[in-house]
Image (tube, rainbow, N blue to C red; front, side):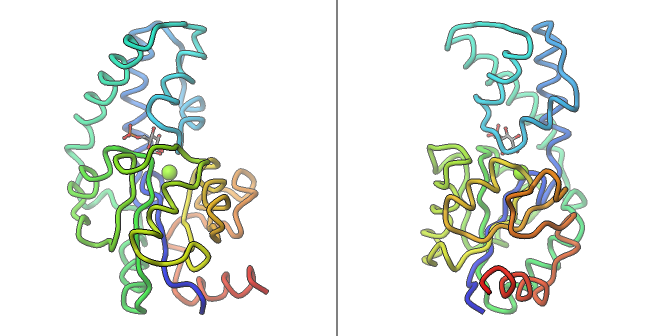
Length: 221
Ligand code: G6P
Ligand code: MG
């Protein structure tokens, strides 16, 4: 097998934080008098904090200056942190730990590639900070997905070439970022939504080393 590393998006792949993002954004939207639904929240998956705020302001046709935007993003993050600080290891999505441990045993490196600046807090709260060989997140990259920067950074930190990495992603922007990085991408979610991914599974509980080898073989043949 050519693959030497797996890079995992965090939100929606290893943990389900979308519900906490939603509650915090909803509180902000309510305060601004903007109607914001769970369906709207789907558009924020994989999107950076400021870009998410822009989408919400757009829903309410609100135009505000940058200082005010910074203040609103700060408030949302405060509220979001109230939720994630209470996260526990039970919130790790099914199958994630077993699959990652199986990869490590087979000497495949594992990394996180996430847009979230809260990645270190979340990994710490759910007790998996030491599980990964590298963590690339919103704190050490500048360009948001679909730019490939976060995945290229993870491969650089691992010292493994991009074409030897496979990415696991639940967001459209993230799938595109992986493809832009020249990596194989396995989507987590619906094949109808994640059309561009090389292969789609419902969750990491559907993954195994054997399946990974099969997917790689099919993609590269
Ligand atoms: C992930 C989530 C997005 C979130 C982004 C930034 O990509 O899917 O919903 O907006 O991270 O997260 P942060 O924790 O830095 O606000
Ligand atoms: Mg995600």
